[in-house]
Amino acid sequence: MTIIKISDDALARAAGADALAAAFEKKGHEVHRTSSWGMQWLEPLVEVDGKGFGPATLDDVDAILDGSSDKAIGIIEEHPWISSQTRLTFARAGKTRPLSLEDYEASGGWSGLKRARTLGGEAICKEVLDSGLRGRGGAGFPTGIKWETVRKAAGPQKYIVCNADEGDSGTFADRMAMEGDPFALIEGMAIAGEAVGASQGYIYLRSEYPDAHRKLNAALKLCEDIIAPFKCEVRLGAGAYVCGEETSLLNSLEGKRGEVRAKPPLPALEGFLGKPTVVNNVLSLAAVPHILQEGGAAAYAERGMDRSKGTMPIQLAGNIKYGGLYEVPFGITLGELVNEIGGGTATGRPVKAVQVGGPLGAYIHPDQFDIPFDYEAFTAADALIGHAGVTVFDDTADMGAMAHFAMEFCAEESCGKCTPCRIGAVRGQEIIERIRKGGRQRDTLELAPQMHNTKKDEGRSAGEEIGLLTDLCETMKFGSLCALGGFTPYPVMSALKHWPEDFVSNPEVVEQALDAAE
Image (tube, rainbow, N blue to C red; front, top):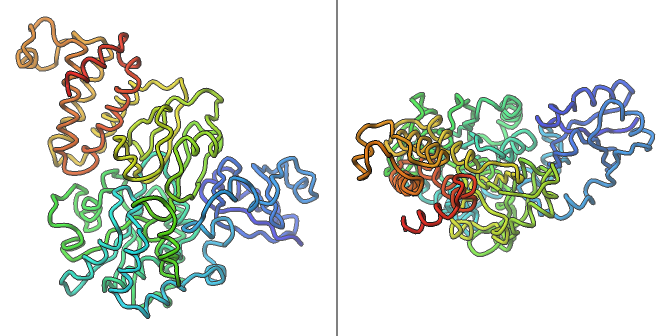
């Protein structure tokens, strides 16, 4: 009897992993359902004695068993896509069974929590700060500073809240972590509780992740005695993108409408139910157990570049040949990620644009592919790392349409609390439509032509519309209450700047309008 390993990750299951596992079991073999290696173009991936076969189908079962399959990729751990990574947060990916306490403990699980309980809150916060860990949800705020703020805050009750509302396009690392290594997230939350003096935690999970929901609830039951007196439970969201913003999330968690709160007060001081609250992303918390192991903080800080320390699980998606999860220290260039590791586009056509950071991230031109994966470097380029989702587009993409989609997405997902986001996104769609029609289109508001000193029967030229769009984006960027309205200008203006030909027939009009706006 041979032990067969097949992932029970949601993507692998969607590709037919369950039927494949049943076929091997029917032939009398023991099947272990493990976490995913993250090589998603090869799912479902079958592992036999360390060797991989994929993407496997039911027709491949016999050939895999007798060693004649043409789907063989060799020893999985020696595959260049795996061996070139530095896996810390996803060190167990592909190797352990998600709900096996035995597998988790054998791979170093709970050692970080055990050590944390000997240190005390102040020392834990210092270790996390010394590691250089920054929030992996997008803001990049130092995790240790946030924890220390909550630790020092006065209050009879404090909370740990995990933001698992992974809603950005092209992102799936949170899902993979929760489905494949749920104990690591729970251990990270328990360590956070030790650090700040919180006895209760909540995982705010998007409702579109039923597999993660099932895994987390099962894992919490299995380890409740280990993490005690810390308690944790899963709460489901209702599909609102804006609830990925921490204050909207807290409102939703309290049973209120999911809309943004004004800051201050910060959640670290007045968060869930008005109490001091740590709100961290899944990847931030899942990185903590490794950092709290003996010597882990120093080793973590040695990786990366400048102020971006440690590793980042980068998600390669969209029109890309080799899509999947690639964990590597900060500093790798975007060109390496897309062309060397990702293999370029799946269609074989030239790469036209890459969007990093979800639907609110800037579109990056291939001329900018020398940008290192670093928070400050991306900020300097008017771009975002966000949750590190990298979505690739080939040369058939219409960037004018993509800019319009950004405004459309913002309008659809806005909580409606602030004017720049609620109304600005609607006006933004209208302006982009007029630009792409060449300008000189009558405004829907009778007053608008007079306001801009143009004749009522003429409307605005394309250049004037571009100036108006630039002004609108500035208002949204600096006047919105949260990142939804504040970051929508990034994809819009980057698309306009780098691909003006997708907006107007004469690209010089765009350049002149942007120069005038400055």
